[in-house]
Structure formats: structure tokens, C-alpha cells
Length: 444
Image 1: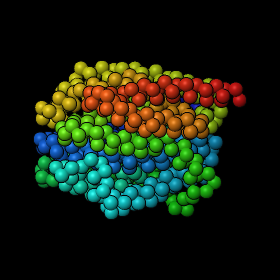
Image 2: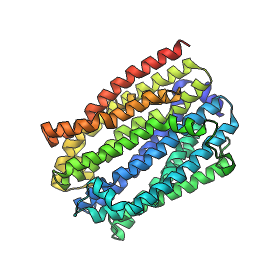
Image 3: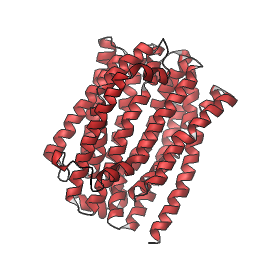
Image 4: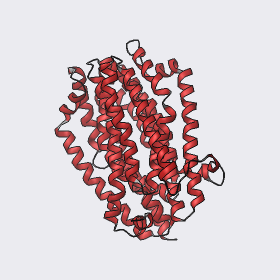
């Protein structure tokens, strides 16, 4: 089967499955990848080290913000170029994503190294957690170029229809991280520092695989420096289209910092608990995000080729899948809520807070996938601004003030419901905005 058949004529359920299943697996691999550090650090039995990893989580989220901007934007731009049969532009997009990721990664590494102390103080690190957080940050910082590039190009590889290869790249990094975590954290006694080293090595290995893919296997893309350009709408086409996803991640980082600062007032146990809950709840969220991201090349290709009927069919089928998967995953997590938290740590106080927080965070699980599909649809038709608004609202303009308000009115019990309330508001608004955009497109 060639790429054109997959994108344009294969029955929608089969096309969605072929594109989405590897993407879902890649997303779940990412979840396992993110869970690994917290899990193995938790096995030390030290809540302070778990709290330190939680406090530094915004750094990794920030890396993912740029990776998602270049990756999602590059995927959308590459998919449209494929639909238009523009081979040169496909190569320019992949080269831009590569070198932009490396440049930003190096810049972030330098910033973190130079301003590490004020950054960690801003994140809420105290005298008990500072040294653990500093060690973790140092080793994750020099891995920034590899972390950002390997994550970004996985989206671009999927745009070529090579979902299996994108999945393999993600799995290489994850398997390496999972193997190295217990060796470095417990075996060599490095604790939280070992988790950061394992993460960086895993991403370096994933990057090597993607380098091989572009040099030896890719039919449409290139990472040759001669194709690198910011002109002809490449920079704006990639960055503007990927901006909603990037804004989403950046504001997630900011809101995580705010949440940690609020929780520190209640002690280190709630901070450790929320770190575990973030990682556990990622399973529900990323499962549906994987579905939505997996079909993005299908959406972009069919919009670029003018096949509106197939575009709508892909959208509707994906939404049905997201709702079904969301309900099943949320139900499973509700039943196993305490064992899930205890899987990471056995500290009684942390488990107590973790169970309460997990219940609150998974309330939006059944519907959050609709938000991701609507945002991807907007990005695929070149309407990035409404998707950006949704990102800003969900992780910034609504969530952050709501956290402070709930804390003032209801204390800790109120704060933990802030994300679910924001999610429902974002899902409703996304449905309204996308419906208007779709009607405007249909009238053309």
C-alpha cells in the first residue's frame, strides 16, 4: 500500500486504525517513559526525591512545548505539502524542524545551566528538595537538544505514513530509559539524578534511530542543511500551525509551577502526590491525544487535496473512538485508583493525597479527547488562532486564576478539581468554535 492509497482511498476505519494505533502506542510509550522516572525514584521510598522530580516536571513540559510546536506544525505543513505533491517543500519542512529543534534545545540548555538556582526557587524547591532538584535539572538540561528533536521528528515521520517507524523511535528511547532507571537510580545509588541521566541517554538513542531513518529510509523528507530555510512561509507555516500545541504545553508548565507553589504550603507530601497523579493521569489523556494526533496527517492531506467528505468522516470516526476509549480508561482508573498510586510509592500520607487527586483529575477523562480532535481539525485547515485560544484558556487564562480562587475558597480540596472544571469548559468551547469554522469551510 502506498501513501496516497492510505491517505485518500482506504476505508476510513482502516485508515484511522493504521495511522492511529501506532500513534497511540507511541503516546503510551511516552506515558511509560514519563512514568518510569517517578516510579523508580518512588522505589527509593524517599518522598523528598519524588517531590523533587515533581518540582522539575515543568522543565520537561517546556521541552515538549517546543517539540510539539515544531512536530505538530511540521506534521501539518508536511501533510498539506504531500497532498499538493510539493516534494521540495516536504524536504524544507523536515530540515527546518530538525535544525530549529537543535538550536532551541541548545539555547534552553544554556539558560537552565546559567539560571538554575533562581529557576528552581521559582518552581517551589525548598531547602529539603533543592539539592535533589538541582541534580536532576543539570542532567536533563544538557539533554534538551536530543529530547526536543527526537520528539519533534516523530510527528514528521508519521506525516509520511511511517507510523510504525515513529513508534519504534519512541520505543527505543523508552526501553532504554526503563532499563537504565533501576540501574542508575537504585543500583548505582544516584537517586533522582540517575533518572535524569537515563532520560537523556534514552533520547540520544532515539535521536540516532531517527537520524538513520532520514538518511537511509525516508522517501519524502531530508535533514540536509541545504534544505534548511525560514523563508517561503516555512517558519510561519510550521510555528504558527504548531503554536496552539506549544502554548498548551508552555502554559501547562506555568500552571504546574503555580500548582506546586500552592501545594508546597500544605507540605511536601501533596507535591509528591501531584507528581504521581500527573504521570498516572497522562495514561487517560495521552491515550486520546495519541488518537487525535495519529489522524492529523489524514486530516491535513484530505483538506489539502480538497476531499471534504473524507475529512469529515475521519473527524467523526476519531471522536467516537476517543469517547469510547476515554470512558473505558477512566472507569479502569477509578476502580484501581489506590493500587495505581501505591504502585509508585507506599508512603501513607502521599497515597492519601494521591488517591483524592487522581479521582479529581480523571473526571474529564471521558471527554478530553474531543478537545484534542477539535484542535487538530482547526490546525489541519489552517485555523490555528482558535486552537491557540483554547490552549491559552485551558492551561492559563482560566486554570491559573481558578486554582487561586479554589484555594482561597475551599483550600486543598478545591484546588485539585481546578483542572477537570477547566477541561469541561475547554471541550464545550472547542465544539462551538470548530462548528463555526466547519460551516464556513462548507460554504466555500
